[in-house]
Amino acid sequence: MLSIKNVTKKYGKFTALENITLNFTPGVYGLLAPNGAGKTTLLKMLVTLTFPTDGEILWNGTEIGKLGARYREHLGYLPQEMGYYPQYTPKQYLSYMSALKGLDRKTARGRIPQLLELVGLSDVCGKKMKKFSGGMIQRVGIAQALLNDPMLLILDEPTAGLDPKERVRFRNILSDMSKDKIIILSTHIVSDVESIANRLIFLKDHHVLTEETVQELCGRLDGRVFEASLHEGEIEEFERSHTVLARRQDGDSVTVRFTGGDAPTDARAVTPTLEDVFLLSYR
Amino acid sequence: MNKMKNTDGQRLFEEKIARMLKSECVPEIEQSEIEATCRAASSHYVQKQKILDAGFWRVVVYFRSVGDALFYIASTFIFGGAVSVLGMSTSHTMDPTALMTSLSPVPLISFALHELHNSDRSTAEIEKTCKYTPDRICFARLWLCIIFNSALVLLAGVTLFPHYGFVVRLYLSSFSAMFLVGAAALFLMSVTSSRLPLSIMMLIWLVGSGFFLADDKHTAATAAISTWQLALILVFSVAVFAAVSMNAARRLYKTERRAA
Image (cartoon, rainbow over the protein chains, first blue to last red):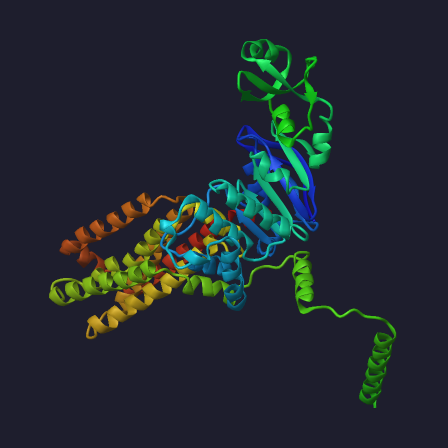
């Protein structure tokens, strides 16, 4: 449905992305990479804010730029930095955005209250957005991205500013609608995608490092991640021969999660998590 | 005879289809599913946006904030008021053509400044991913502003200088200034998102025309330009405006142009 073919993006001499090839079918895709790896550049190309220097992006076989408005009609986008008009209420803002998205008034009138309810802003729908917190603005952003019931939903760091409860609510929203949509979720917060993404895309050094399911990724580390209890003084020495993924203070000792090197006799194998994979990929 | 044959043929064909539908189990499709299929299919073909798209013009005209409305009212009052006061108090000493020429582009430049004031990078980023892009909306609003500005000039000319013998010259000169300055404003809008160049242009135009009006030699020189020469200047300024508009459109719709 959405294909990225040998896409390279250069800004002058700087290469932001090189030879990216990806195919998307309905489902949730997590785009995971540290800051500055090219996530936002990739997303901006998908939403026609910028175009590849080389290669092409196809929507059902047609180049997205050629489709123009016909492509954008199917698009929902939440940028990293959500722009809005402070004088508008969420209701006014969503009315405006629905008009920009080409929704007729009747459809918009039905859809706006539903979305405000969905993101938990029904009770403040008449208040000006200048009084809103960052999390509330982000929720308005999520609502605007969903206005046109998009077939392709692109979200850049969508959970930034959301509290844990809101994050769970947001994950559930995405999960519910992933059946017939392509959802691409860019984040560097592993837990955001661990439970809902069908596939994960890792970007490293401006290339696609891997594109697999969570199980496949974690499966690679099966039997290779351990936990052991160490004394404070042993840690430095231990770190020289092992890759420490996490540590936790437990009274006088420290519980270390690690991989690589010889496991101490009292170490126990643990189930690898996506965070382990992420940390190892980008260490 | 042929017509009858066709009608019979069509009837037989419809009966055949009805029989087939009865013999086969055809699932009933919900309206929402049909709509969803149409929506999905629509992304397989390329279709250009139409100029007479009601949805687009609804955004252009309807979605203006209260601040925007106040701005237009204020622009009209400032323009109308300035023309009235200056025109009535100095009508014996000041050439109405020169006066109207200097003031006619004011609403247009104010509009451009206002549009730039309202533009915000992160908001525009979301808007640009929608069906109707903000650049295109802004461009349409600029054309509406040209119409609004022209109406204002016509109205001011007719109501304030009804007995002025050179009304054709007044309009030729005023519209020339409006199109030329409009072209400059449009060009600046398309190359920079900063309000500073446009503000400087507005200042230069107002101060420059003020000095021009204060000097009788200049107004006398303007009066010496023949009507047909003024008509040529108007044709030239409209051509410049059209050329700049097309160029600005290409710049404003850079993303679509890249892909076309």
